[in-house]
Image (cartoon, rainbow, N blue to C red; front, side, top):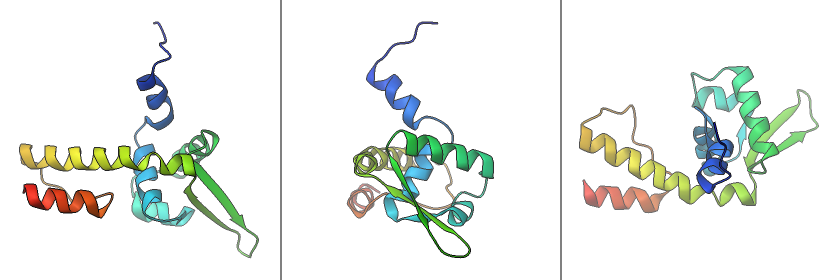
Length: 125
């Protein structure tokens, strides 16, 4: 298999996988503590969450901040580079919500990455 160093391959290496975009989505809303991720993403395991966060941190999209208190508190947030990914998340959210509407797919909840897309979709529907 030939590996192509193209934009889409680079994108998939950084943001591909089952949970990375969802992790980035929640971080686009606010800083998140490790424990909160388990409430936000019920199906994720500790190992997978840890691995995905480490990869996103290594790739420069996520910042990990350790607070020196007892018990230790760790909080994750988007870096400036990570914030530049938010428009991609917005587009993905809009596309997914529109697809679900067109196909009649029931969703647990309507998720919008920001109010701009929320108001646009309300006009469409």
